[in-house]
Image: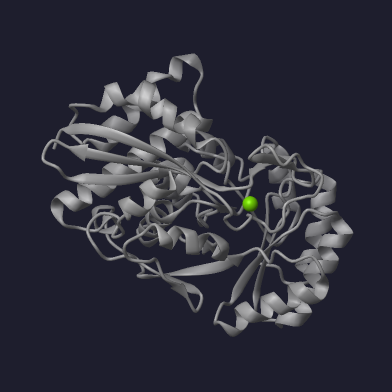
Length: 384
Ligand code: MG
């Protein structure tokens, strides 16, 4: 089971659907990237990700993916230039040992997160896929078994701009059997509360609604917004304040009865530890495209000891990332609900031999060995 080769595939799907809806006007059309002013974050015009294929001397291979919404070649270069020499010849089954080896390799220089851990993630997922294929078992089984085979999902985003359009699209999802939607807001306390109010009215009292504030608010603004949202029975308020402000987020959590959710930008158990100890939030949202399976399992187990549920984050991760998230979501007792990005799913499935299914408010857990999905390599190579 020794590793023979490591191949990276930085993927940029042109003309894909734009994440969170239409991109802002006035940006340079020459670059792949632009800043979305309301969120201050850089976004790509393409659907970007980083795939990795690890093959053993016996010919068994595994696919991994790191969430790489911008600059997948950067994550890929870390794997090629730093990690490949550490991986070749090692037993692919030593997943935890390899994780530690890669993490330790740049630790003394202060690389604890970011692209570095994204690169470890891609390797980690590929090794789990490989292990599952080598013993003929799905990853969730190797993680200790499935607490559930249908993974509850919420629709992430109603990428429309007017009240009428938003209500129309949300009602379409409701008609398709979905029972939960998250709105990407952060447009100001009053506008957010107004949008939440008309969506609540349109969708009815039992429909689950979540609000992502994209870190836009001060502590006092977040509490002000939260109090308005509580009256609308909003499920959770995500990322109300700056991601670095652990104490501020804890203050918001304490002030509100409604749940506060955070964690998409955090990658390791060390980053979650401090937040858990300070009870900074009520729900944690690790992204398996940033944590990998090994670390996500540790984070979820740690959260479990604090009686805190996990609602994994899923944004533009493609099929391998989605499948890895499904196995992790099946194999933890404290799953809250999983994110579903309808606009990403068609591209993701176009690269898979068997599609991932999310219907009637649930994902189906893939059942084959490893991730239970496989990349259509011909299709992938045609896109590179
Ligand atoms: Mg978010």
